[in-house]
Image (cartoon, rainbow, N blue to C red; front, side, top):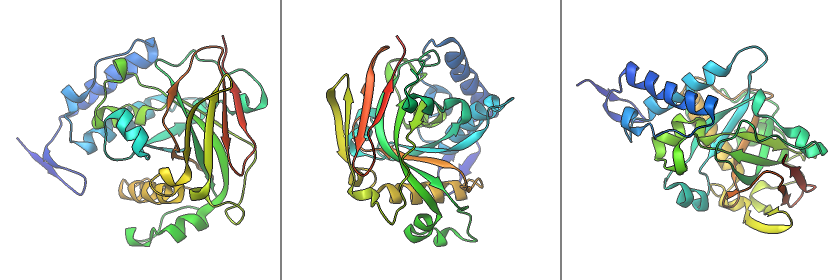
Length: 280
């Protein structure tokens, strides 16, 4: 069997047919809202290029009409979430315009009609003022990504899994667009001159009961370090971060389930509370 050796992986090459079968399985689960079996039987447990190829296939299939890429998300950045998912490293996915339900921050109830097994987490988001596309990978430093940030924003990410009972390994969640669902970002942008992301604290309540808490330092030590990690991965994949992109930098505390009708509030220090009501 042919071997695939690169900076991400060295092992058997996953066939194109297996990648297409994984895309089809996950796409059907999304369309029907019926969870599917994991896809690691098709792409293995270690072949990250194959997992990201499945992810890209799913994303490309959604880029029709008015749906476009608006940014990226970083997943599994905190030890708490890694323990919840049973993984030991971060991953990334794409944010699409039809995932943006930030109208929820303006008091409009958010629909759950596209979700399968949702969970919610609080995090810091960044809007980029400039591209992160230097000549070499070594140039992608913490200083470079900090300079590329326009503003930081409070965010709620509604993560979701198309895979039954969240029975996921690392390649499963990567393939499933890093277990993406929806996202809400606040309007209260802060410049990094006025806010240090690693120093923020977060409390997430559901119906006024605290269900999760954490701090900026839980996100790879610093949400800006998570952004640097993402910038390196994006550069390696030949799809660098661009000006105007929204970046969800990763959970500051454990993700938690919620139900129709729930009111979720993320209070992140330095920002106004971000409140969302989900439809009954």
